[in-house]
Image 1: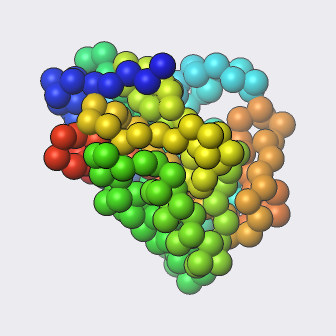
Image 2 (image 1 turned 60 degrees about the vertical axis):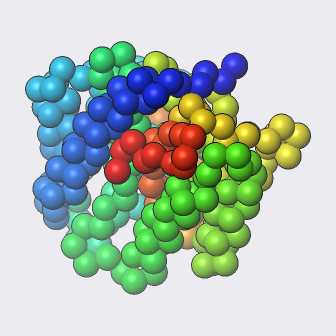
Length: 254
Ligand code: MG
Ligand code: MG
């Protein structure tokens, strides 16, 4: 069941999205060599609590037990769901930070990959291509369109740059719940071929391309959470919560 949101509800989701944006802006300012992923987690949590928001990921149930962090902090070959820890960031690392909150009953969800110090050119390109594929999606997802057209453009672009699109993890509808229908793949999945997503006004989606430098295949570490690339090469992740409106697209987390 896909829940379409009213203009008033989208306004509330904008407030949630803006708080997520604020937190990620802040983490982007402070992220540096020698900082731990737990430091970033503490800062995200501090701001969210100061503003009366709940951190959606904290305690989220999964095979590894309740998720311990407020952010997902995934470094280098870690794709998503990395657990914040005492790990110190090194010069040349990339770190994908995913953050979600519940504010006034509505969710916001966004992710960015930050470069730490002097990152190799090919890895920077991976980060830039992933970010650009998200920008393409927010530009192309117009009311009346179909998601398969957007997903085709994203995946064609990513592959043309020599990278691979993760198929195992996808975006999602979002609203009063963090994960609502529909599932939003970053490529044309068999499911999407059978049943396309019509981009109608009121639809709110979390679009989140996850892009690998090498193989698209991933595996989960024994902690039950951390997803890593199967070949150990780096991975990047960018995400926005967007709303389809009568007149276009509103990026709620930008
Ligand atoms: Mg997210
Ligand atoms: Mg998400």
